[in-house]
Image (cartoon, rainbow, N blue to C red):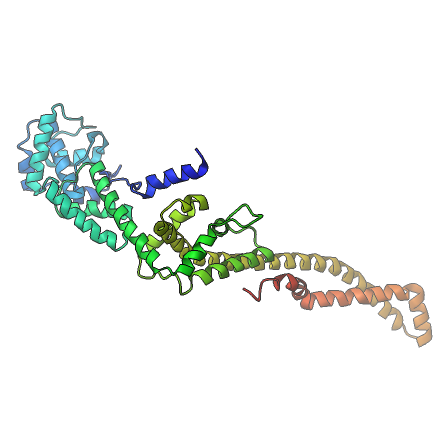
Amino acid sequence: MSTADSNIGKETRETSPRFRLRPHRVTLPVDPTDEELARDWSLSQEDKNEVSCCRGDDNRRRFAIQLCALRKFGNFIEEYSTVPVRIINHLSRQLELSPVLFIGEPERGATESEYLSRLRQYLGYKSFDQNLQTQLTKWLESLAAEGVLPNDLLRRAEEQLRVWHIIPPASSTLERMVTSVAAYAQQEVFESIAQRLTPQTVQSIEELLQTKSGEQKSILFRLKEYPPEASAKAIRRYIDRFEQVNELVEGKIALGDINPELVQHLSALAKRYDAQSLRRFSSDKRNALIACFLSEIEKTLLDHVVEMNDQFLTTMCRHARRDYEENHRHFRRKAKEGVDVLLSAMDILLMPEQSRDEAFALLYRHIGEDRLQEAVNNCKEFKRLEERGYLDELCARYTNLRKYSPHF
């Protein structure tokens, strides 16, 4: 199977018609605090009276555990082995039962089913039936129309069932419901976005999927690339890409009324597939996915350009500082030698009881004109470095900066 075919299969599994959803399971704290025990695992006198109807200490413990779990989480615990010993013994103390290290699974399934049915009735929970499925589906459709994402739909569905005091159906059933609603809503989003695009914009989108003569990658693929190490050439290239995308998006792709999280989700989907895979989608879906991608990548490219500029300037300043400090160390040593030479020259020139001509003759005989000139030059160079050496190093690099800075 080709890579493109593999991608298409992956897309089918993940976005149309099924999503990767994980229904919530009751997760208990490994080491609950005293506050958590008091808040979530305390029994009222009425609760204790209901528990006392059970036969056997272990059955009473299991009944109490499921009572608190249903009240807290809106669902039952699937395995008693997952219940921390602190929770078991906190309930045991309230029921005046002896402490235990663990609690086993029930021996009779019929007894467990009877107890769970009693718990539903006691806490006012209903079973999930066809009428409730229809009601939940309509409620999910209203959320999906607002752009709520599939995983959020699943979480919200579980929360709403808890509010309605409904025992959730099997995980696979709830997942199928959410998947179906999300897929239908997403198709409507595809159509809504596609209808906003002008023929010229659609044509531009199609051109992004094409590979130019002599190149191996489409324009769309290049837009997905992560930026390389910051350089003037790379920054200019990404500025050009931003301008290209901005020309496509500005005033032509308006997604402001769509949930931003949904736009990001669809953009991420578009980013997963190559041009060949996208061309296999329906036109509405392809154009909508790429429109969302362009809307998001415009901001991403701008972020990349700003970050690369910051990196480039930081690197340029670091290199300028390094070269300045290296020159500074070099001429500081020469300037020290030059100062010693000039001080010796001044001592000769200021010797008493000798004429000007004699002083200069003695100076050139002991030090020499070339050595004097070198000392003066070294001192001047060190003075220049002290005053503006770092700035000069930066200015020497300005030509490279100018390769992109006007466009930036």
